[in-house]
Image (cartoon, rainbow, N blue to C red; front, side, top):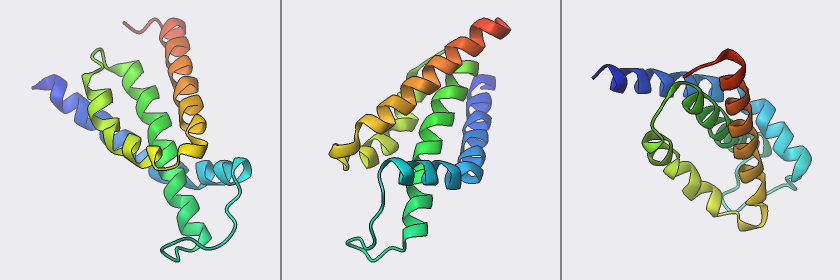
Length: 118
């Protein structure tokens, strides 16, 4: 039960970090893939960028934090499944979340080696 509570707390930390950094990730996404105005649902540009930024921030922080503090990868796949479904919709830019996930994974491995986290 202790491991379950730890994983829930890690998820809460990931969601909070994603919420506060969504604007930064959204502006980075806008620099790489410019948003040119309207969409199918008439969503304003700022809202679309915040939503995309939240998804990218969640992906980055989730992989980073769960690789640092969690020993089992079962949680990673289960809790990333909704994000993967949202990211698969945009096949043209699928390389961006893959690169972001690899950066987070590499950073987590580097931090584990530096701080000797078992």
